[in-house]
Length: 565
Image 1 (cartoon, rainbow, N blue to C red):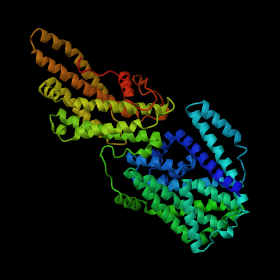
Image 2: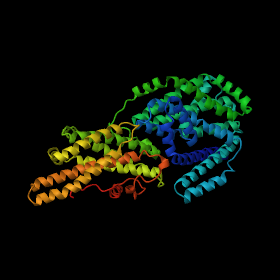
Image 3: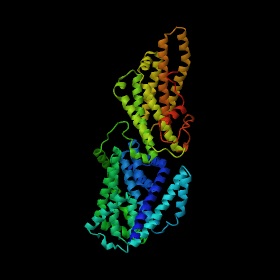
Image 4: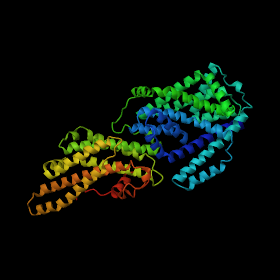
């Protein structure tokens, strides 16, 4: 008996370990693909469901799909209605595990055949880096899953000698209710509905339970994911809580409907499976799992806009305006976390550009209304969040996206520092030449702020670059003339120095505006154009962001005019 129970527990453990290894590897490999699919394939509720199901089936993790979805909703790139569609699709996608187990794990017993794959994958993970290491981890995890299924199946087959299906709750209303509760407990304890379903299929295959009992357990295991979602949403962002609530209500309603019609529903699925798969019980349960999730999707999709509005009214947005979308749960998918940071930086940039434009027009109220402090605090919070994002393991596309993020943050921070020079602002307003440059810069700032607020428009970095070069050239040619006139006492020395300081200040503002727009634009580059953003951006280390990293970025980027030049 002890050996049998040990086999069952060990099989579940191996299955969970394999799922963790494979899912983490696939998430690392598919980080950019997640972003691309969610941004392009979720234009309406129907495509959103398909995208959610497809992504979850590929990465074998509904949590990865949900986290990516939260990131895109937070960033404003995905309407919440479509996000709910992705969540519904993710529930459908999780049913693919049942098909994988019943078609390969239980029928073909491929665990022993995959032992070399585990060895190769582990070796690749240990001795290589980057994509090959991720591929190795994925392969090793895939193999461990099926070894776990083999062990679990053997344990369940032996367990049937000690447990007869008749000792389990029977197919009465009360019996089904108890089985649903057992299914919920299995998911909560294992922290994985996939592992719970795999255990149920192995028990069914070994004769420990019958089809009706397995179906009730699967309904409970589907509900069990809501407990995990509720726990995970505690302390999360508003979007995380909204997504969790949408997931919980969908699963509860779907399970309630499936529970009520369970006898007739399973009978219908059994008849179909008898026709299509020869009455294979494991495939029958896999089909049942998919069928009642499809039923739930059919219930919710027609009313998805109303359902989404109901969720949004229950949980309202709160927190700092500029950084309320930085959610710690996004850190598990670095590509999505970087996307969220990019959009937060766009919002901060738009706010800072608008405020700077008002200052250049002579309106000092922006300095006195707490807006500067709001921007400064938002930049500090964004820096702290960026430090927590795992660094990319390669020097490819994701590396350069993160590098551009660091540069954009750095230039926004320095721009916010340079804004706080009221004396230079006063001199600029009095000097006709500088005032004209300030007005031109104000027009560029207004355009860039508008572009940064539009998710479909990239900032016009070339316009900002041309203006920055023009202003820098004017400064270089005017400086010697001003100093010569000062030496000849044609210009008051003190006033000349103030004019030069204001000119450098305006030049620095234009420079940082240009570089910020450039790097925010670079962050939207397609992976097919995988090259360093600019030659000036080379040399950045691939570790987590620290202060010395930003200093390195400053030295690597084109040098702005110094305040003491």
